[in-house]
Length: 104
Image (cartoon, rainbow, N blue to C red; front, side, top):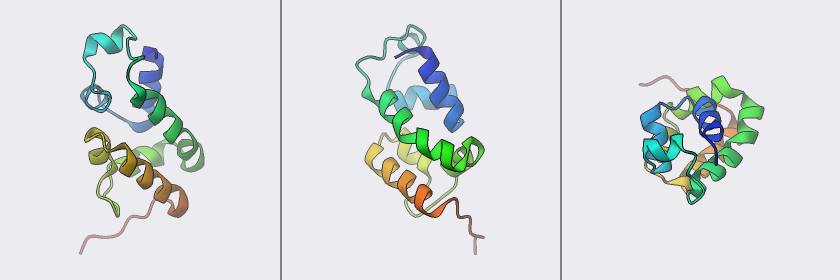
């Protein structure tokens, strides 16, 4: 995978450089050198987020990532590399849209 793919994921989700490295479990040199072929996370996350980005829009997807939902904050699932739970959270986003409730 190329650094362009990494940039696309970072831009789509609004991830910092540190978050990208944590999510991909990679070091900066591997990312810069495009040496991520052995990391399926990048391809998986690009595929998982493509349709939601088109459906709700990138700005909404970025906001959703850092907003607490039924499973907690999706960013926490992502940096914790709980990709199954992240996929479930994306499915909820697609089914319900971004729902923000006032804190009590």
